[in-house]
Length: 116
Image (cartoon, rainbow, N blue to C red):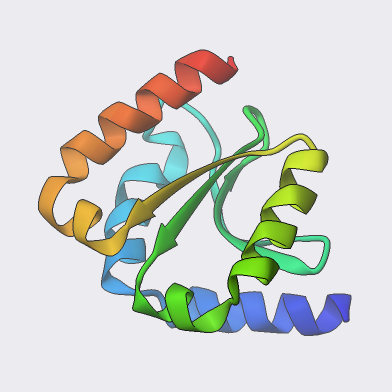
């Protein structure tokens, strides 16, 4: 199961959505608050879009595929597992990134300030 998740994460890194590309361009190489972010990271049996271990912050980008990919119950179980592991999840819709990426990063600054 774990190896399957790693293979899937590697594939997802190669096939990023336009919104993931925009976010990664501003998160990578410690550009945001000098924090190290990883993308398509495996935690347990789940893959998260972006993870900062220093602040235990997960950033999820949700688009139409998220609505179809998980049932509500699976999403709740996933969130409970990640929160039980000590992570805080921040979610953004694709259109938020497309239309207001500066607002997205202002919200992330608030989240980081609360976490560190």
